[in-house]
Length: 339
Image (cartoon, one colour):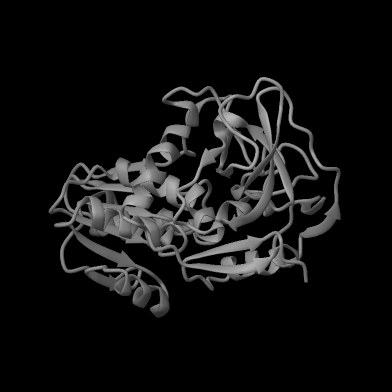
């Protein structure tokens, strides 16, 4: 099978094409596993964290990718939940304990990091972590729902806001544009503010119904009760803490933060940024239950999913575009298109 493979971690500045197109054996499902023929796979910032070594895979070479849509083509022994021909999605969680806190368990295994992922034509996964998808979403539209949507849903729950309050989103890419729509649906009387570094992102947020959009460090019309940060940088963390109202909560939705501006954290002021019972909450992974709850919600809203597609062979280009901030919605690899 065709796959884009990472053989060594590298910074994109030194190696702009770290993934190499490779022919690999098609995997075989074991007990309780299904073989999925992949149609599309979303591109997530976590792949950049893996490639550049901030969350390095435990073994190399590895196939990245964890926003996967495809169809079941083979059942391993003992399978009873999925069926051959069924369309399914696979997210960041490849397998864990199945408990409420499985995202925090040492048994958590991440798709595309701890096992081979979706930048390929086939993948095997435990059938309990392959999720049926709402019919109204195309394969490309469904892909970002498996991570950007699922972990965005978890972030929104952890923000703990109430209808009528003010919610801020800092960063407006694959996850942010879905969280905004979820928040508008669940909290119709809330004020939704978006902080984004580019004018294009701010305009996109207003098109989707944001009540205000401004630059990362711009002062909003009112102090938010909560802010969800989906950026890879530290500057938005300081800016968000500064503008939160007393008792407010910052939810950081990132696996890792880049180190380029980490020195800014040395300027943190207890009085300006942390006093008055402000909280910081991180998001660690996603659970099976998060995805099971989120997918019907995405269909009920229904979410408008903005995607830009690339063929599998251009995965490096898609990642470079993501890294350089060329983002409107989500980026998706179309596995079936061959250049």
